[in-house]
Structure formats: C-alpha cells, structure tokens
Amino acid sequence: MFSRRQKESHLDTIQYEIDMLNHCYEKLMKEKWQSTPDNFIALECFLLHYRNLIEFFGDSEDLKVSEWKDWSPRQLSSEELTSISDKKPFNNHRGQISQYLQHCTKSRTKDRGWKVKEMYGELKHVLENFRRLFPVRPITSTASTSNNSMESFSTATITRYRVLDFE
Image (cartoon, rainbow, N blue to C red):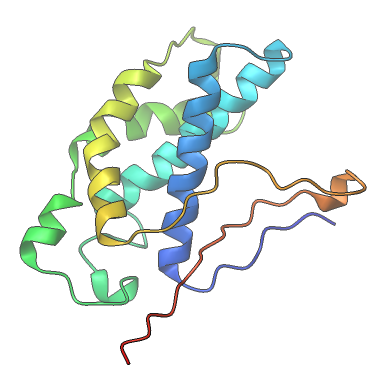
C-alpha cells in the first residue's frame, strides 16, 4: 500500500505543497530526464502543486490564506497577510491548468506549452514571504532506504522543530 504521512495540521499541508512544487520545479529546470515520461511526470506534478498553491494564496477553494485562523498557529498582521496573498497567478493560470490536468477532455488534445519559469516567478515572492513567516527545513532529497521497494517510498512532509530553552 502507498501512502503519505498524515498531515498534523493545515500548515503542514501548505508546507508540503511548497516542498513538492519546489522539487518539481528543480526537476524541470535540470532539463535532463531519464525518459520523456519522466519529463511529463515532473510537469504534471508541478502543475498540480502550483494549482493547489495558487488556490490557497489566491483565496479560492476550501483552505484560504485569508482565513488564517484555520491554518496558522499564530495571529497574522494585515501586513503579513498581504505579503502572502496574491490572486494574480490564480486568475492567470488556474483555469488552463485545470483543463490540462482534468480527465480525458477534448481540450487536452490542443498543443499546450507551459512557461514554468514565468509561472514560478509569479508565485515566488509569496512563497518566500510564507517561508519567512513559517520557516521549515524543506525536503531536498529522498531518504535512502535499505530495500528500495516501492512500499518504502513516501511523500511525507518533514517538519523539524527545535525547542528553545530560555532558562
């Protein structure tokens, strides 16, 4: 059976989406893949996580940046909230991404190129501001496993906390 680690909070979910978007973006920017399907996997995963984040930061769908009491462990000032809110990427890309990733539809046969670098650039300032407000050590590599079986792979988000001693 395959599974991700259960998220402990909505903040964990957002951090996971950022980690995965960054990972997919790095894969695409390398422009070296083992095969063409690997390129397709990286692109579709990038688009999926990008869409999830622009829905959140664009204040759409279920979990919304403006409803910080649902996901933030602390109160946010209006300045902080403004620094992580941006509807432009949502308005620019959400519909096209959904059409592309959606089920077998007629619109999928249209040749579509994605300006991944530009898209990422539109969201980068929000991601950086979010990480400044809620720092974590992002996932940068896959942990090695002894048996390398398919069951050993996971999409877990690892958040490390350090207890500060004020004594």
